[in-house]
Length: 144
Image 1 (cartoon, rainbow, N blue to C red):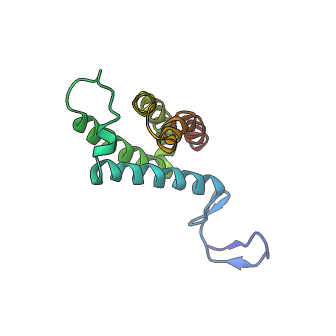
Image 2: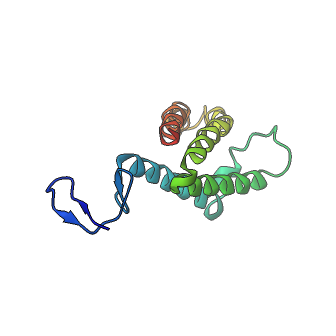
């Protein structure tokens, strides 16, 4: 099947689906793949270096902090996969927004625990709190 190149008007052998050529990346695809990469990286870190994540699990959660660290790592990897695939991207984006909201209590715990830490550590802990908002907005955009 042939189609015409958008810029030159020449015939090309690329297959088209609707308005897009197979393999063509849109800005929405790049945004989704960036979010998937962030989630996958963080998900892997939950297994590769779980100790920092264990320390921010709220004490009110039942069970071992390590269990919650691993469960949240699995959730991040699953959501990353859903965001990466176009067929599940909408659901994955919504799940990512929910995940970012769900981990907010851990960020609050970190900020409370580090309130007497060095200025650099406090800046990291306090800086994570407002960062949830753009992450949720990013996930929401990917879901649209």
